[in-house]
Image 1 (cartoon, rainbow, N blue to C red):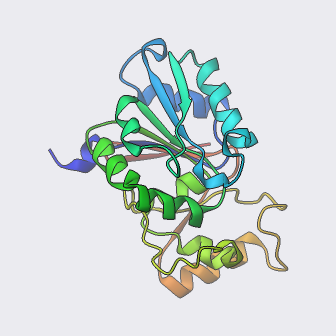
Image 2: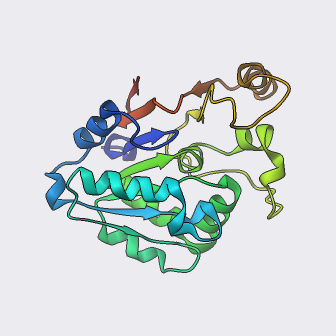
Length: 215
C-alpha cells in the first residue's frame, strides 16, 4: 500500500464555513468526534497567534463537532513532537512564508508528513492549505511582500500535488488592479501548472488519493 493511499486531508479557505465542509471532516475521521482530538497550529499568524480569529473559529468548530479536546500547538515555540498525540492536525491561516519557515525549522514538516502517511487527518485553512501542496509559488505571485523572512526555498510539504488558491473571488483579499482570475491565469501560463480555485465556502476533500471538491 503506497503512502498516498492513507492520506486524508480537508483543504479550505476559511475553515468550517458550511455544514458540507464540516460533514466532510466527519467522513474523514475513523471514530466518533467525542473520541477524537485535534491540534490547531496557529503559527502562521505571527504575534498573538492563539487570539487570531481564524484559529479561534477553528477551535470553536472542533468543540461544536463534539471533539474530546482541541489544543493550540504553536510550533515556533513548542515541541513539534506534541503533534503525535492528536487524531487531527489543523494548520491555520496567516502568513504562508512564516508558517512554512517554522514547519521546516521545527521539524514539524517531517512529523506531519509521517503522520499523514499513517492516516492522521490534516485540515488546512488558507495558508495551511497552501503549505500542504507542492510549493508556495502562488503566494509569491500574489503577495511577495509577505516574505518578511526572505525565504528563497518555496518548496512546501508536497502531500498533495494540487496548487490551490484560497479565498478565490473574495475581493478584499489580495487587492490588485487585476482580478484574481486574471492573475491566476498569468501564473498558470508562467509555471505551466493548473491552479485549483476555492472560494471561502468551498474545500478540497482528499481521501486515499480520491479528490472531491466540496461546494
